[in-house]
Amino acid sequence: MMHFTKDEINLMAIYSPGSREGLIRELTEMRTHLAPDETEFREMTDSVLNKLGGMSDAAFDTLDLIPDFDLDETEALF
Image (cartoon, rainbow, N blue to C red):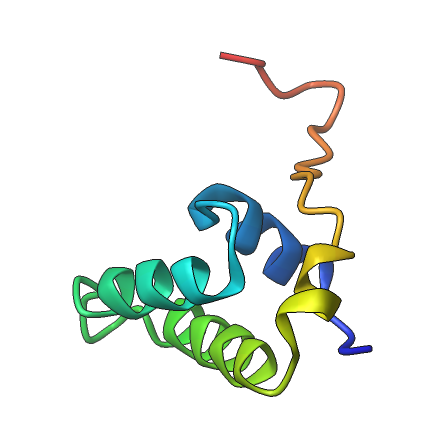
């Protein structure tokens, strides 16, 4: 099983259409819209794409793609 960071899970939860292939397609498209200075986001997206490419559809289906944004108590919810 691939290990994904919390940030990677959040990214996948936001862009996932429900399938591994669909998520790869969505992330690949989203990546084309990143500005040159968004290197950290680009690196995280590349990491997720690499991990998704190395896993099966069955393994993907076992992932709980539920975002966890852990808002600080002082942060607004909206």
